[in-house]
Image (cartoon, rainbow, N blue to C red):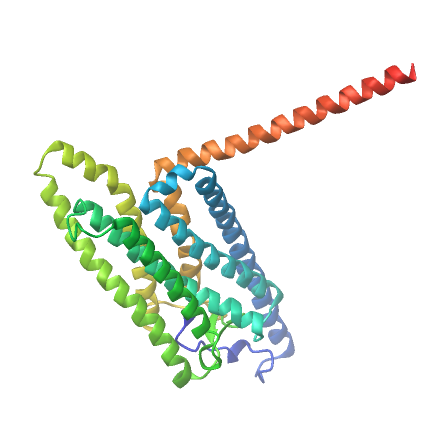
Length: 339
């Protein structure tokens, strides 16, 4: 996610006329280079683990297709796509830091646009998952005549279309985003008066969706309290859906936390002397939020993932055994022919 505030790069800019001794200047550059190497390595390691975990989830979803019969899991699949996009962008940003690359090129802008648009798209799918949980909690009694499958599939298409529009929007010259190793974050390329519009598109969209989600969560909370006084069978149904609800809620809370950090960054969040901000770290950590929560909150997914991984390992072992057996037979055959 691009930062609104223009972080100060002059102190550590290589072309800046420093008022220091040459040795001090070289030490400053060396320290910052080492720090970039450390942060970049952490980004790459963390996001690579997330990418592997998310890829295993995708394999599980497609090999265990029965999971996708459930609408919340289908929404989580789409949400996972945009989580993966963000993880890839942060993985690349780690490489940008290590190699000190400032890619103000078409592919650099494309990566920046992907980072921005996938973040907003992930928020739209969190909101969609909230709507689904809201509908389930009320036993689909609100607008009962609506075809639920058609309704949610249509919303999924709208969310993907919105992502495409955002991706194009952030590629426009006035609203382009690139990764700046000097300030450790994604930045808008144009001056404040230009990128302010792009920031407002991002901020207002996210804030609106979060506000609507908050309203739905408050209603759900009231419904859960009321359900505690109802029949035990109804309680059991609510409890069976509560884990997916909690996953959506945790996704919501982390996004709210990130937005609050951005809003009050100048007042409450400090930076290191070399310009690195804690918010940049929070942004990278949160990109893996949905992936990690899927493993933690969904026992069904964990079981299916375990079956998938074990199945793949078993298949590989069988293939290796057959290959070894075939090689031994060939060796014996050659030996007999030789004799």
